[in-house]
Length: 201
Length: 234
Image (cartoon, helix red, strand yellow):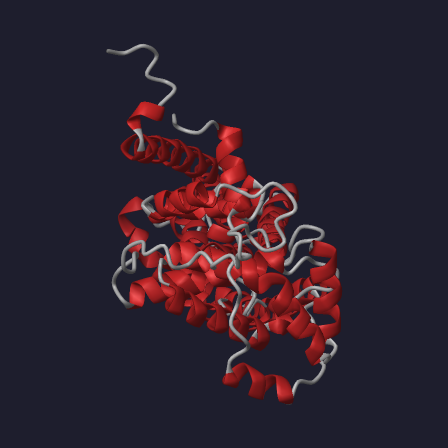
């Protein structure tokens, strides 16, 4: 992705608007996923995504030839989210509604469209997303950046403006909390199915 | 089911479908319609500009203020070593605050902030411990530390140019860490102010050199960290 982003940024800065659209198509889904997880409200995330790319556009001269713009764009999204949260004087918007996972089109027999490969456990994924949204913002951001978006600890720390050590701790705590929450929700859904009660009466 | 193992959770999160982004907004579309080529940042050239302009300004300031009157009697090695330390503080902090690591876009803002703290500490301690004097030097002693306000003003006035030009070349560059980078630029300017004071001020008390001349680095870093970041964030 970074080589593509560099190439597109190069063309965009040289005045090619189609390169900007391609850059948007390349980065916007992940950025929107990140912003959706952070705001927990899709409409707000959409708006912040537009603001992020508007800032990118207006500050495009800040780019350095040959440099990957992705961490910078993520950092702008992070800053835009923080500014919005501060403006509204609330870091967390709304409660998890589970409406930020796009619907997967299904065939008539109920299987997901294009599901030749093993279908992911959508219910469990939804539960994971809901559990993710219950995490404190910093832990949520750490898990989203390192697990969903595949950033390294160092990249995630640079995006969030913190130290790699702090990011590692946040990601670890977030992961532990997420596992705990998922285990609890699984047990609440079907305690008899639990496999780790190891012969408890 | 039990709590998922790490690899199961990795898979769950990795499998989460990405949302479809909305089309570009009207405002962005309008701005794209008039898109023209832009000149990307050249960090090395920017750092050279900041360092060059700042040195010219400092030299002009020193020409107006005049060199210290006890200069001839001071040990040459001490004068050169101390001047080199001030200059190294200025140039290295400006470089770190402006030039990113290879392949990166944002400068090493954390290193710049930490460097500012280290430079301020070292120049304050160095001034208090490593001072020299001649019969022409002025000695006020601790009781007259307040006389340092003039030196503080000269030092901060020197720091204005590197901090301002640095903030201008970094505008739009730092969505995060701008306060740290600004502190680095302020400390760089403060170090240049310390160099000007080192060549101008004949007061030879350790307290004055440490608290006032060294303190210029800390004060300039704090002022820059408070005022500059707004310009540097996109």
